[in-house]
Length: 275
Ligand SMILES: [Mg+2]
Image 1 (cartoon, protein in one colour):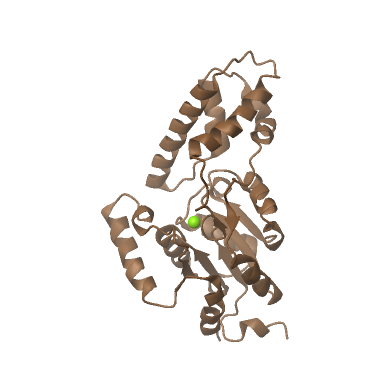
Image 2 (cartoon, rainbow, N blue to C red; image 1 turned 90 degrees about the vertical axis):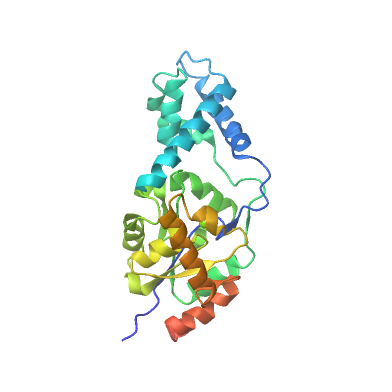
């Protein structure tokens, strides 16, 4: 018997949220939030007079190092850990006890210039109305508790009560099987009952297929197969093969409007399960 469609998991960045209009650099963006952290810490008896530029420089460096290591072993970088380590390095002793308050002060929110792709809300409604569970699996180094602020600002959070999973919380980056297993556990669906939609051919598509799911590559215009391919020749060859394969078949789409036709082929009658 053909499996029923019970869940759709989405990547977040450049799959649901369009980052192409962001003009701030990563460093400028972090400087805004780290300035708020310093303002908070300056109210505390930590005897710390930290220069913002030095903090941003070192935080940037430690973040780059964490991602370089993560690409080797797929253990997720953890932004709060990186921040607390960096604060200790610049001379703020004992900031750990304010961990929660520091993350509140960091005040992460929707990044200026980001928008939800226009084809996203209608498709989420269609899937939800058909009784399909929806989830997000992102390679974010920020915990989902921070990224939830973006989902709220963008009006997306209401769709994703079953699963919102950041790599920082799962401990592993896509395409590691552990993060997909955690997502399926939260969805309470089997791999054959669940599909994955994402814009990264290696992390999203290769990872989901490796976990036993069907996967659809979302071509959002920013999909960069070479950048997604990683550093090793094997990664690049793998991405090139995915690109050839995916672009030749119905497993890629330029608009989510094309998703129902793919689901019709994989899960006949999926829109009428509730009737
Ligand atoms: Mg993405």
